[in-house]
Length: 156
Image (cartoon, rainbow, N blue to C red; front, side, top):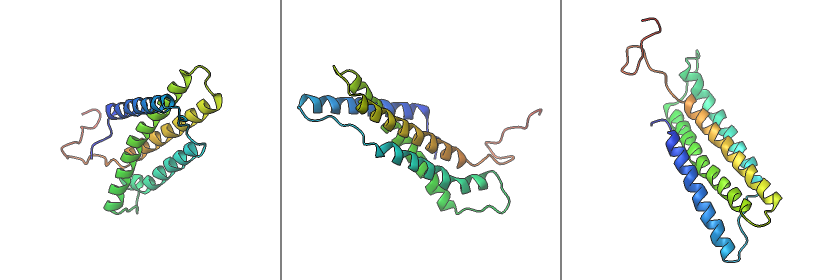
């Protein structure tokens, strides 16, 4: 599995923002209430970020060569998949949160409480994005000596 690319994260954030902006515009045009994230959303996103990082700790210990540290390869693969999925979905949610904020700011009289909730949801999504990227980095196996990806030591 390759590392998550910045371009993928930025593209997903842009897609999430554009889709949420369009959805909010369509809802407002139809006379329906616009979507405002609940207060529980940022809390849940931060809790998920903490869980993702915590489950990556045993994999990090093994990848750093900690003595007596062992982890099942299937567990490590699942943690890596969870970390990648978390970072990609968090990028989409970050864009969606920013789309809501942008939509609310362009209204005649924006509701400060709604903007605050949207900003909190965006912050929670950024927290999940960071947690996913940290866990993904921790699951990286360092190159072996003499392997095809090994680099010469400094001074050689």
